[in-house]
Amino acid sequence: DTAVSQTPKYLVTQMGNDKSIKCEQNLGHDTMYWYKQDSKKFLKIMFSYNNKELIINETVPNRFSPKSPDKAHLNLHINSLELGDSAVYFCASSQVTGLYEKLFFGSGTQLSVL
Amino acid sequence: AQSVTQPDIHITVSEGASLELRCNYSYGATPYLFWYVQSPGQGLQLLLKYFSGDTLVQGIKGFEAEFKRSQSSFNLRKPSVHWSDAAEYFCAVGAGNTGRRALTFGSGTRLQVQP
Image 1: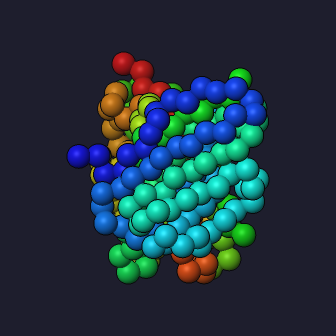
Image 2: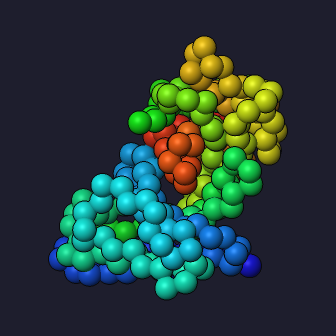
């Protein structure tokens, strides 16, 4: 069983479209994240949810809207897609053991905006 | 704010040779430090982590890393590289004072292994 699964794996779309990426974790974790990895492989946090509540919202355009219907799911909706949104988006969930938080990543969604 | 620098974008080593990947961090307090590996088409997998205690930490797949506070470094090492180690490696620092420990990642080092 895949611990953190995200769909679709590849997404090719035109500028101006609206698209969603779904993420589900079956690990029972309370916290989930969206990370963006750009063409230079730089990985940057976008959002974090804890028990369906938004707790981290980095400087991300408001065209990006995360939605967490329950703590096992964190979906990412993107409105009016732009060329610069092309990247690989990673979902992750985390487990906190004492001071240490371990992230479990999905395999990524490669978004290409044409 | 914390930051992570991985000075080497790309490293090539021969199979069986030793490996050291560099990581420098900037953080005001005692950092939580991590190394992740990303195989092609895959998400990131945790190799090892440091947050206190012994400054030499052991991880999976024969990797180790040493925390040097005086140099603000957390370099990853492996004595003998295997072809399957070819991947992208990311160093990360945890922001312990945010209450949610969001990780800041370096830009990664791509490792190629020659036969």
